[in-house]
Amino acid sequence: MATPRPSVEAALRVAREFDYPSTQVQRGVDEFLREMSKGLSKTGSTLSQIPTYVNSVPNGTEKGLYLAVDLGGTNFRVCSIELRGDSTFNLTQSKVPIPRDLMVSASYKQLFQFLAKQIEIFLELHHNDHFEATVRRRRLTGTTDQYRQAEIFDLGFTFSFPVHQTSINRGTLIRWTKGFDIPDAVGKDVCLMLQNAIDELRLPVRVAALVNDTVGTLMARSYTSPGKTETLIGAIFGTGTNGAYVEKLKKVTKMATSDGPAPDDSGNMVINTEWGSFDNHLNVLPNTIFDQQLDADSVNPGIQMFEKRVSGMFLGEILRRTILSLVKDPEAKLLQEDGVSIPQSSPLYSLWGIDTSFLSIIEADTSSDLSLTKNALRNHFEVNNASTDDALAIKTIGHAIAKRAARLSAVALSAIILDTKKIDTDETIDVGVDGSLVEFYPKFVEYIREAMREIKEIGEKEKKIRIGIAKDGSGVGAALIALVAHKGNVTGRQQ
Ligand code: ADP
Ligand code: MG
Image 1 (cartoon, protein in one colour):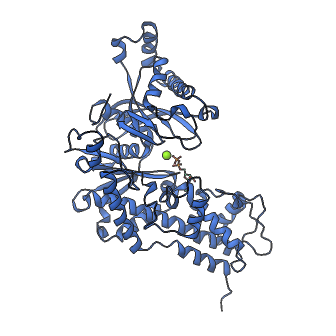
Image 2: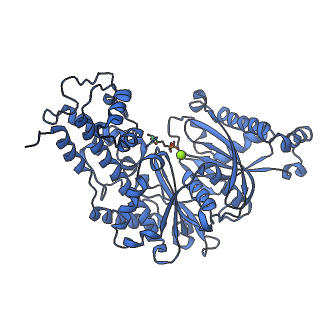
Image 3: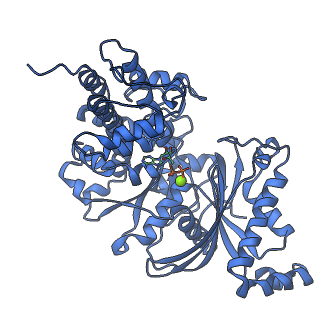
């Protein structure tokens, strides 16, 4: 008889809890479809289905020089993008950390003055030849109409906080997240706050578009996608997860009630689904004891339930909880053999102690003695002398958690593809993705595709779906949205 391998057997048992079989994938898709259409007709669906006032996606022939800025969480990025009109672009960028005292402050003024200052520094450094003269002239003469219109950069503003958007360049801040707290900004228009600070410096810059990162990804992918195919979905699998897609305007019936009839309902509207909160009621989502405990210990229990099973912020934490459960289990004996030690200071014992990049490392470990996994355990978690069985046990569970995440991602993507009925046409269905999880987790996209094939309405037609990374999505995408805004190819109350 083979030697008993309690930790490996216990791990297989835990891994099975993360199985997400075809039947559940199918149920998930059906529920997602229902919530999608609910969200288009009224508020109160778990999918917010937010209209973005972007009505067209690029085909790669767009040209011009645009500015883009990205206020995400930790850093502020400023870039200029030259779209060459042949699906290629040239991007110049700078990145500065946001000073902590501006993230939490009594007034929004200092933060936005800081952002405008960074734009000025960027223009002086990278576009000095073209624009210094303009800036100097404008300072001397004031903002006359003649100079106001001359050589103005259109800027796309990627702002990754919840906003209530009312047009392509108007949106009020609903609340801060990610550690920001500037009370007097809530309820104010984020584009105007930035534009006012820019105007104080008399910079030749117009805030032309307010951009969600998913929409930026969709636009960037559509510009760069091979063969001039227009992209259908832009999706993020990074710290969080979310997706945007191209919807028929006539299906966005809630716009007709809140904002008057849509001006021309024969066209399209890019919709930001906010799918991170899909199925917050847990009608169909898998819900292991580890998911339940993670949710209970999170800052927002009961919210973002889909995201908590899919995105980079959470997968490492789910794994940490499974590992601790088997460490404490006297039968499983994970990391409990002689000579193995887990010091009290190990991040394994702290909330959020495992980064999701660890899942990528162990998944990629194909060495026979799992030495990469053992090294990572030593270097990241101060665990010395882990056995090959310990490493295999952890790898087995990590794999199951990530695979479930990919299969859940397939639910969201597939439902959108089915909703748009594109699967029954001859067209290639193009999907742009971004975020470290999808970019770096080995085979994440392959697991998505495998689950797609198991959905009865997709099956073999999965071949028609093309999934590709949208590189530099937030910068290029914001530039492209600034471009469509400038062309006036948008609906809504543009001001
Ligand atoms: P953001 O979402 O802030 O734009 P990213 O797309 O880089 O940034 O996503 C960051 C998230 O991705 C973090 O939750 C991190 O744990 C996770 N992550 C970073 N590197 C990897 C990796 N190599 N494999 C899987 N996940 C990763
Ligand atoms: Mg991102």
